[in-house]
Length: 400
Image (cartoon, rainbow, N blue to C red):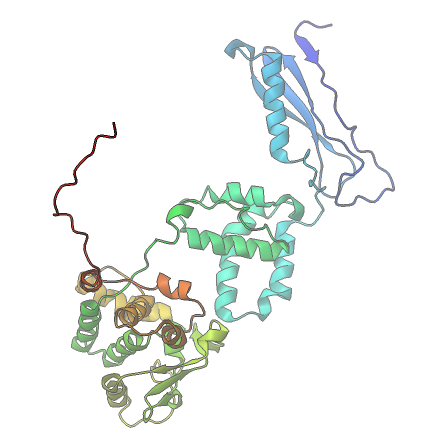
């Protein structure tokens, strides 16, 4: 035997798959696990093992470098490292399935045609972004069955620049594309501990007043009214852009929300709870009437061609420049929605009424929109009796 090549074989639990007429199903009931083998060549430990190839009966034999003898690696350590590599592929797991010829990229294209094409424009745009920017570049060439919860969980740890909520949405899209559910708790999201406490932008009462005043000073009266209505109703941006004059009952001071707008096109509102009636105050109703100047048809806040505004234009052309001039932290129209919920909570409005006006179905969602200011906290704290910490010192009795 050549001294330059010493080979140490470890029993391989299953022989290479050979071509046959047997149909390859999605299980390995006729296969046991494999341990691979290690070999030493010129002072370098290598490992070999078999890996299934999508659409083929024959498996591919892989060779990986494990380490160097000069670094102290012995045969047992080489075997241990190889087993770790094999275990990492998942091929020895009971639920392992042989990869099919269908790749994530081909499945994604089919999913876009058969599922996504029938969704709302806003949903399509968001999910297409997930697929094209994140999912296909990472998993496109992989077989559908190979992308498991474990694979996805490891992958999202490489995206620390994205917020936890964004990662959750991307994983939700991935599951829809794959036609599989990973199961609760299977995905470990970065910063899960602080995920719920990551505060969104909430405009304070003084900030809202400054924004509306600045818009007027800049000659953007329509936008001043838009921001005032956003703060006074908590309507979402798309709901504001789709708001028609006929949706406002000035006698009863009620706004009916039944549709939304996205990128200049109308669509249904976000959820079934989004179809609602929202009460407005006298001052806000008067402000809207003045803005309309006698108009009785069309949108309350139309763009130049009479259609709905686009949110990107509102932010880039009006709101963000105003915030920069006022030296305030940037935020979108959702900051007015957070403001409204917080004001309703601090005013003592009942939770069922808040849910009804805001269009959310749970107290938990409302609480995520609530930002209590320091003065409110002080008032509430004053209602709580304080402990008497200045009384006589207790007499200590010797237990003996």
